[in-house]
Length: 444
Image 1 (cartoon, rainbow, N blue to C red):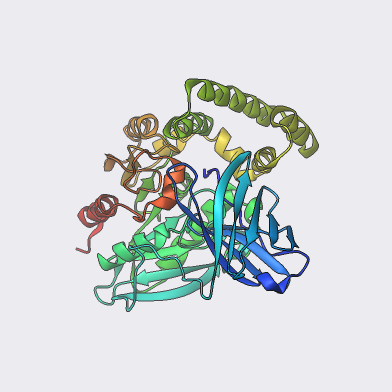
Image 2: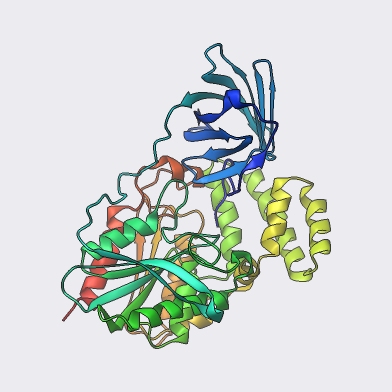
């Protein structure tokens, strides 16, 4: 559920006519509206990439043209055209994407400093951490990191479940590592935490785009099985913490296994997936300052896309109808790719009602009041109503004032703010989770 004007999709290195006069790393700053984004060019051995450092994404350079001091960089969905100065260490020009033109200057740097947010933990760490590998669903190898305190075993343990899209064990995006920060906080408070690379990401095998909800549930329950076999873990106190789409997978796994002791939903769904996406489209435009006319157009276009989704399964038919609706270009290509993704198709059709009503374990459901991707006002009341019909007699609903979808303290909640906020997870969100776990699952 991620989108933004300059959000770049991951990619490898592209090929271009080699010009070693530009070889090296180049750093610049884009300012779309009130947002500031650091971007970089990486050029070496006839290969290169364009990276959005704060959005944690990169694209291969498809073509690099140098004529005298004129430089053109083409990454397919965007271009940069500039002029190299006499020193050979500055390129001043214009970045263009989707009709938007922004001034951009690149400076050559001798060393790229690794991006780090203030909440990222710094060693030496006061707890144990261990890389683990185990078999997930269908025997797929999964890889992750288990952290646990140095004393006080056996521990209550939580498995972290990532949101939509291919995510690593830290749920890294836009320069932030939310699951690294969350696991550090909870481990310091006395809990064990397992965070895992999605299939096809990092150390995990498999193909992410072929992964279904059933696969994700199987992978989570394989993690539960792993923890149950560890002497450091209390086998009766293993639970799940899922963010965004992870807030769908967590309840599904808990409903399928009595080995799950608790579920924490961070921006999880309480209404059907198509309604979540419809509300998301409205709220994203509104937070970005869009007009009522833009919202009406978005709702109408989205309704037509949903109709294509409901009536078509053939790739050729989907491509034809989406291009007729949106025209050629990256927006249409992204929509087509999403429609062919098993998890996106499951998201649109998913109704969380039966799953939430089937839960019998303790549940904590959190949402930020400024979340534009999973609306707190639409989802939290529905989650409460559904849990009131479940067998769970211990559930808590909390709307956290001023927080966005990533649980950062936000201004508008708009997606393009995520990268500009230094805070990775607001202290109130961390404390709410930690306090709830301590009240309900502290070691007796």
